[in-house]
Image (cartoon, rainbow over all chains, first blue to last red; front, side, top):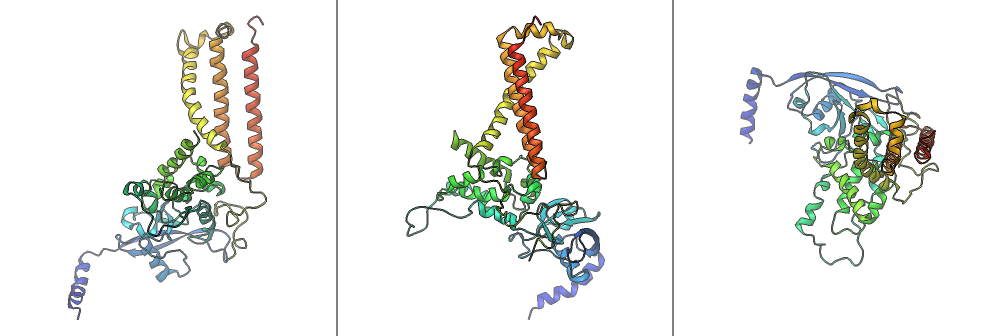
Amino acid sequence: MSTPTLEKKSDGPARSEDATPYITVTFRLRRFNPEELEEAYWEDFTIEIDPKERVLDALHKIKWEEDGTLTFRRSCAHGICGSDAMRINGRNRLACKTLIKDINPEKPITVEAIKGLTVLKDLVVDMEPFFQAYRDVMPFLVTNGNEPTRERFQSAEDRERFDDTTKCILCAACTSSCPVFWNDGQYFGPAAIVNAHRFIFDSRDEAGEQRLEILNDRDGVWRCRTTFNCTDACPRGIEVTKAIQEVKRALITRRF
Amino acid sequence: MSVDSTAPTEPSVDNPAPLIEPPRARTAKTPKATRTNFELYGWLFMRLSGIVLVVLVIGHLLIQLVLDGGVTKVSFAFVAGRWASPFWMTWDLVMLWLAMLHGANGLRTIINDYAERANTRFWLKMLLYTATVFTVLLGTLVIFTFDPNI
């Protein structure tokens, strides 16, 4: 029935024999299993893989073919669910959006859990403090009065105002790249501020004042040191530091 | 899944993450929400005092070190002559206060960011505040009670 597929398959091997796309790459993974060893350690895996594949594919290959105990999170594997943020070659990225050819496969590629959150096993961290900060800024629409019978209207310009911060997928790449968050984890962190920004600047929302009050406190936006780590880390390209600065400006213009 | 049974109690090189009681638990030690604008004013003060200090400090350095013979001219008589004028007294007083508060607030944020234990943080800040108050009061006293005929 599917002759085209069969035809392609038959001359596939012939082509790949001339120039195999596979290269040998070493992955240096940060392993931690509290049930076996109290210390974390580095473990090297050398695999044959197409450099056009992603780091997530390499992790799958290692887990499925070499060491089944390797633990990491992933769900959609297409850069939308935000499960597989990890520190690859010292930078926070999504494993499912990072191609191996883009991160110099000639040297060992280091993969470790994101920093600032308690490591539970291998690349899996306890995300609860991160989500608690997210919940603390009330990331939902708050309105007064009667519900309209139809949708709440909004002009294209009003929608554009917070368009950038709607892209957040809560992967924690920004928050776990923030040196202020690394210290005591009490700072709200870029992700929570981005999601507060999304509602503060939404013309339909009426709790902007409350959210600003929450972020005005000791561990709110004023702890931001403008290091731009969050903007560099964001796999969705959100201008995180800019959003934080806009919240600061909103606080100042509200007061004076 | 129990976090507490498996996670180490102290952050280490291998487990750099601080153990945070989930979910950002409000324990007895957690400071209450202040609901003040202290951090806002602190942040704003750093920006505004910084702008003023650029003018004051560069002017001060030019006069003291560059113009009119440079650093060799600075002597007791030179300082006494400058402080005879209320303008230079005000200049130095404003510079002293702004520089000390600017520096102290900057160090306060650095201590907040880098001190790992609540106790360390508290005592470092107490040391900082004591030093700041002492320097500001001493400097102010000297500027106002300076006697050129000492």
